[in-house]
Length: 462
Image 1 (tube, helix red, strand yellow):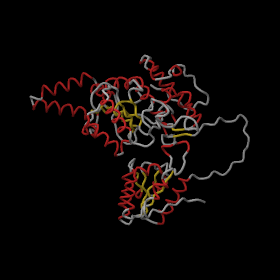
Image 2 (cartoon, one colour; image 1 turned 180 degrees about the vertical axis):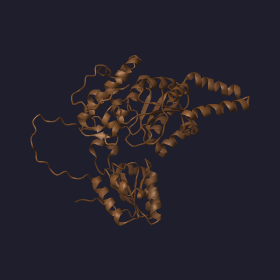
Image 3 (cartoon, helix red, strand yellow; image 1 turned 30 degrees about the vertical axis):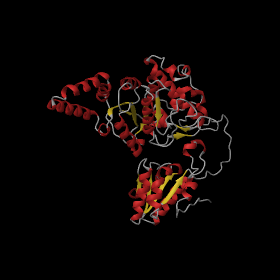
Image 4 (cartoon, helix red, strand yellow; image 1 turned 120 degrees about the vertical axis):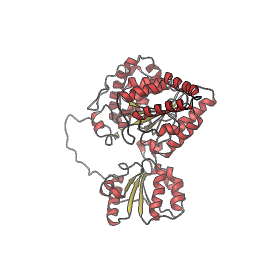
């Protein structure tokens, strides 16, 4: 069982085994029996490093075991790991030669808060926006096939990111090409339900085993001449899978579905991934994890610990310092305005693509739940949904990060502006955003919005 910590260490913890791992090649030299120790030391060091500089917190803690297992079994950087969104990449950076630099993450001249190709050969694809990993990993898998290489491609995607259309577009194409692609669905209890327990893990190992795959494929050939017998066997297999995997969507798309398994059991991950690594065709491994795993306060409040600020040590001598009044955040002002307008106009509707907290809509969602729509990570749908509401004389307000509106640009032009529909867009994180880096900068909004006819652009000020 992984250790659970209750405090963020202010001094660098003692991590003797982790300190010997300067690359994944070093990790692969260890016996599997030492991986749990690596997990505990890595998680404690991660707590310390993020506490020193601030940054994304809960997501990285939730994938420590998975990160260790992947780098242990796959021959990175030759094999390709593509992290979706990328805010969970801190353990990956620690294991790939950037351990002592992690305290500079998201700082000027320091490490990027997301995977970045120019930073390391282990960062195979630059990310920051959601739901792109499967498309990128499939492209890498196809490229390997064209080059006659047996290197593998793995996409690691969360259940929230799996709600976006691009993820399913990529999976549909992967099923068509039958490429050697592994998709790991990291389910941290946000969107997709799962079964748990020993029976689920047991069947997951069976379905991923080479012997089972060989038996199944051989049985197809033999029983294809006996339709009645083959139909019975096929229905029996599907019924057994349905016992421990209620959602067979991925099998219907064309993936071999494995899981769910415990994403915090490093031994289970190593066994299952070891079976999956050399299988042919598209595979989907479903793991369940806890965001903030290993840090008790974050396990209780994963939203509050999504990211943290730098932990400042308390001074030995308390000196009274006059406190300046704390100014409200822009998104809080926007959220209050939204509530005020909603009280005055019952037609006002709030829409956000999975950015309720970040865009200041929490209070609106509580006070006006019947007029609040969180459409998940579906920016295109959010914009066109607003257009449909406007057609019915409603007053939709789309609250969205500036950088994410780029994903709904065609809908903005075709579905809203061309029809001169009354839709308000509240763009958060406009302009330079500093710590979040280039992927989250709102530096293009004025340029791409000024080209749209009838668009009114306003930048409020005091």
